[in-house]
Image (cartoon, rainbow, N blue to C red; front, top):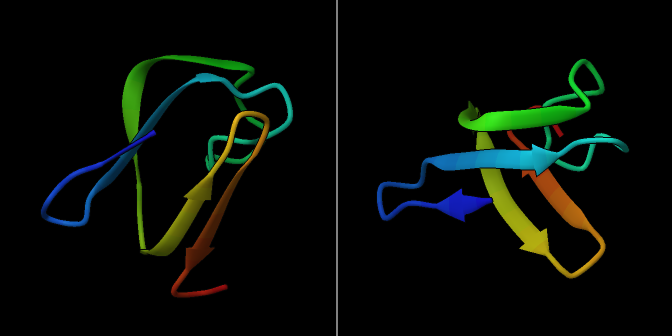
Length: 55
């Protein structure tokens, strides 16, 4: 995941457990995809958490 200065969040890589914030539709994401409506993010070695405007 990368958070840009303008607040945009992009994510890519393994999504086997839905950890990219894109749902479970894709197991791997090779090209960065934008995650919308993000308020806060937390990332660690084995996890990522996103809070959206919709919770």
